[in-house]
Each structure stands twice: as structure tokens, then as C-alpha cells.
Image (cartoon, rainbow over all chains, first blue to last red; front, side, top):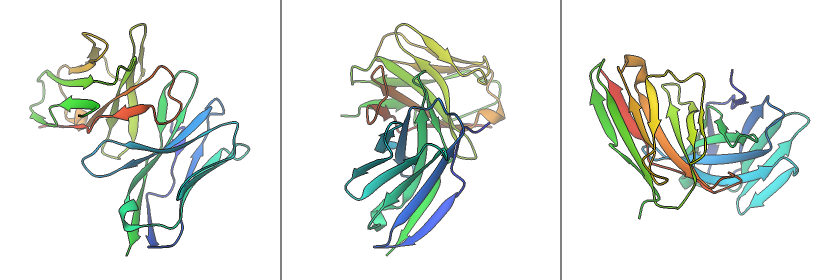
Length: 111
Length: 114
């Protein structure tokens, strides 16, 4: 039972355009959401997070939006750069301090 | 200076063997984790551990056991390895409450069971 889902396994975007990565969750007890970026042969690295009491968090080119009623969050990258090409994992935390990951979306930014 | 280090990075072993993957963190964190990334690339929690409490994902077979000699180490022992155990295993550590960028992952240990 996947409580966190990323329905798009891959996304291809032109350099300079916006990348939008989506994530859906089913557990209403999640109170914090995170995005991780992963390059091949490396561990995931933290990118940006958002608390369930907010609907938007921005950090430079990265913005995360949270729609609690729809149980949906998205990561916007603008402008996209070739170095952003990686696998992006959405993750959620509940009170038990356990991270639950989505299946990941492979982003390819074309020069 | 690596914050979370795992050894070995690559491990190929035969079915039925017992193996261990070591993990060390030098961040002074209280909580450590083991995650498994399976063939479908899903990252799934296996264990969460601190000095006080071990939380086990109930779907993890009891052939897998975490061992923590001290707060900076959480090793993963796997008995009677099976083909389906082939995966990438990630160690991670965090402060008591993961609230942002306070969780750090190791680079992963690629286990192949033949």
C-alpha cells in the first residue's frame, strides 16, 4: 500500500522552462513533506520541505506547493537547468518520525 | 569528511550466506535508519533506531536485524540471504525529529545475491 505516490516515472523538460513534479499521498496524519534529489550511485539529498500548516515554501529556483484538501503536493523548478537532471523523491513524515517515500520521478532537462 | 558512511559499497554474495553492512555517522545524531531501495526504485523504511527505541517495519523479514554497538553506528545483519534481498540499502541519520534537512543519507550499499 503506497501511501505516497509519484505517478509520473519520468519527465523531460527544456532548459529554462519550468519543471513540475507531482506527488499524492493518502495518509492524513502526515505532518511534514520533503523533496529529495538523487543522482546515480549517490544517496538522496534533501532539497526542500513544507509543513502541513503551510501551502507554499520557496527556496531559490525551487518552490513546493501543498494542497491538503487534495492530498497533493508539487515541486516547481524554474528555470530548469541541465544540472537538475536527477531522480526526485517526494517523502512524508508522520508523528512516528518515519519517512515514507514516493517511487520517484526521473527529471531530464535538455540543453 | 563523510557524514554518513556505509561499507561495503558493493557486495556480491551467494544465497544462504549471512552478511553485514556497516553504517557510521559522525553528526552526533540520535536516530539512525535503514532504507531499502528495491528493483522498482521504491525507497522503503526498514528500521528506525535510537538509544531508546527500535521501530521495525513489520514487512521486514526477521532475517534482517539491526545492531547498534553505540550511538554512532547502526549495522544491518542479514541471515540466509535470498535472491529477493538484492537491492540498494541506504543508511540514514537524523536528529530526534526530522523536520527538514536534518536527515542525512549514506551513499548506499549495492547488494547482489546470486
